Image (cartoon, rainbow over all chains, first blue to last red; front, top):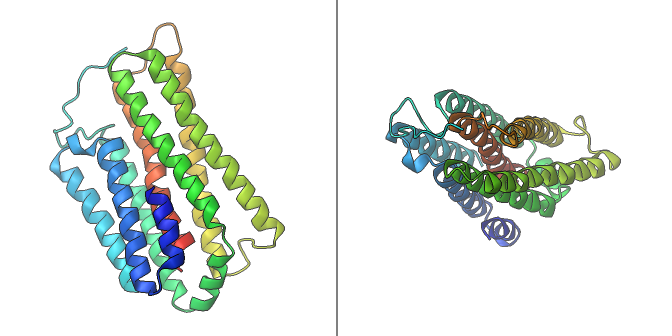
Length: 67
Length: 193
């Protein structure tokens, strides 16, 4: 569902920055879903959880700012 | 079959083991830097990047995302079944995981075939240089992941299962890493330009 939404957003959103934010935001959401639930990071030490969050947020921020 | 519980709350024992997580972070960092480089170079040729992005098949990319996410789901179920000492379910879910991986590779091959047929090779322009390098590098990881999962699969199917939960979780973590990398590649390469 999230994947379909991402694909649709990319086609229909007018402003390119808004589109980038929405698309990357949806991807971050999926990223956290995979890492915290599938990879069971929710049971891990706070260091690993924080590291993943910081990495993804930092990467997304840099990509959006560069757009 | 050793499924003794590991305390994953310990900083030295993240799910799958510390070594695999060091590898995961290194890979994520590498792909992250490459994606930043791609966006950086797009600033010089925004129109070319946009036109090139339109030549990609977003549907293929979205379907591949579904394949990998579904595969990741079955991988998680497989690990859960292994912990519950249910080998039958473990093997079943592992088969579905492998199927997702194979389907990803098949669709990727079809996509690559269309690109090569149309002349959109690695030297076509900067966008396609990044496209080919990033997606091929990811495909290599998926192939390695499949090889690892196949070795786990055949190990579990033996009369006496010698696979430990640590090895199984590490293999699963590597497979999920392929998923994580694709979740970064798909939006940047296929959607935002």
